[in-house]
Image (cartoon, rainbow, N blue to C red; front, top):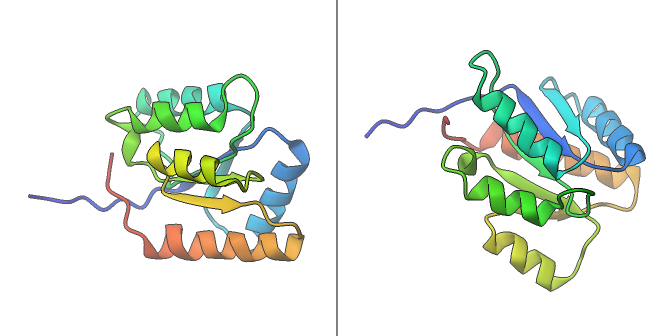
Length: 147
């Protein structure tokens, strides 16, 4: 059995709030991210992005998806369900990144296939730490299979 290790060169962030997108971009930059970061505003855009990558060999799937739960048109749980039920997309790690702290949401997200669940930090200093931890684990440590 062969196992292909892939280092993809982008991160997909699904976040509907413009201020949160700005803060995430700034935190990633301050933590020295060299990977391309693509932002989309809702769940429909996540699925469109993945379909575009699937149909264009010049593009590559993201190393991971940072997924807000509360988005318009299609929320994070719906996206999680669809991505993890797709034979090609299901290998992409999905990190839920949300303000929801309740146990029911945490359990549901893991049941749907989330790889990690992170509650959005309250300060920019904490966000910098989260960005650093994401980089260290998902981009430097974790091995992600090829799609």
